[in-house]
Image 1 (cartoon, rainbow, N blue to C red):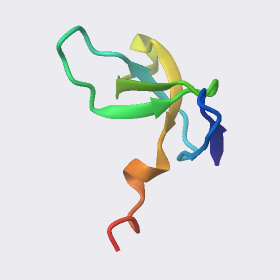
Image 2: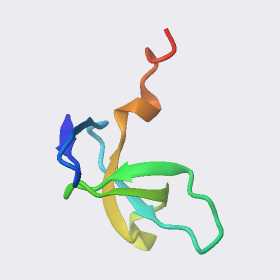
Image 3: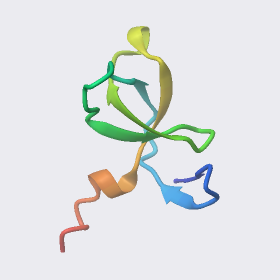
Image 4: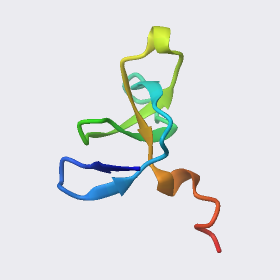
Length: 68
């Protein structure tokens, strides 16, 4: 699956939509998430009840073949 980023580039993403929340100031997020609108956000996966938004994990982050 592909999402066109705000920069106009196509980014491969995993097909499962996840819920996310950006961490507070000074706290590093664990994931880079691509929203359906193409915004790339640094955030953490959370339950849908506490979500700030929804998006996809970049396939580059999860691809098992990338280190071959």
